[in-house]
Length: 440
Ligand SMILES: C[S@@+](CC[C@H](N)C(=O)[O-])C[C@H]1O[C@@H](n2cnc3c(N)ncnc32)[C@H](O)[C@@H]1O
Image (cartoon, helix red, strand yellow):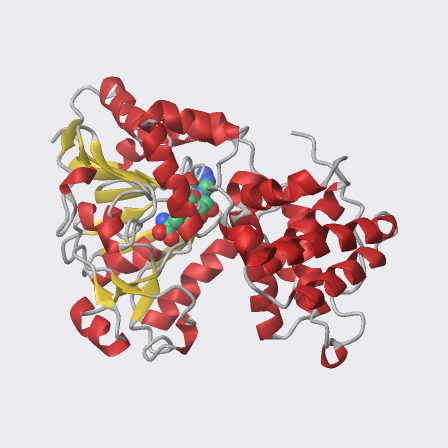
């Protein structure tokens, strides 16, 4: 899809220097630039370019910019619903993003006049946006008059059609409304323990979930927690921890983690005592995996390469956490449905099938393959498992089981989690996990 140029300011993130940034312009300017790049150029907030846009800010400023951009994207359709009646003609994208940013802050109870002044000052910095100063001023002042009550009256958030329609076909309208509500609520901070999760939950004052994940409130700074630097735990959503539990690596087993970085599942399997080889195509993501291994003191062999060309055989078990649309992770990545338009999904589906076929050639006779994706789309999950079973006579489907799983996740072809499920525990990401056994 062609992306529009936003025409927003390209000034340094803190023109006045951070010490003089009394109006909080620095983080807001960075958030505005992030929004322009996500909505206009399809950039993801996890992209290295996003970090560069915040590089001149102090850590608190970066955290604020990131939070502002993330929350604006999370509430995007609600914000547009709030702003819509006040905008007769659609202003340029950069102006719309400045308005969205201001509306979010007003809705969430920031001091209204400060927000209006800051956003007007931002818009005044851009050659193509400065002409809209009065419009921005008038629209945001109108929202200040309505106050947070106006914000609270707004309806639910909606996914864009490219994703909403296939999800309705797959799971039905009520489930999709539940998924959208879960996206709006966001995600807790989930941790996997290197050792005893009950002891970790007690040390950190967290909640031990039935599947063994330790859950803390969102917003906790993970690197400040006791045991972080000692490598006692790592961040991993409760659903993301399931594939390695379903694989259930045994001490001494030779296990291949075929798409491994940044390594949450490698760490789990290494902690189970398996001899893990972690392969990934991406050098920067492997750097993060190496950091994780070093921090936790766990052991794994790390290789950079293309899974489709890897030719070492005889593995007892392979975990294939395949590249996918990542549509199961929108609670933590609300930029994804905005930055993406679904165009890449057919290529991903084809890649996943090729990866399954290749992984099966690497297993020892009777070895097991766990196929997983963090997608909500059955084409990247259930349909892949079904098609693999059709393509490979002799391949057997085994129950995908793990301690503490909710019976509602058990499906014919594997485990299916969704953000609208497990509400009593606070939800979890969307994942599909299938366990397959090669002919002995
Ligand atoms: C879903 S992520 C893996 C997450 C990881 N298993 C974890 O738990 O931290 C998919 C990974 O596949 C990698 N990837 C994509 N294409 C690949 C290929 N052809 N060969 C190997 N890795 C690939 C990406 O770099 C990405 O790190």
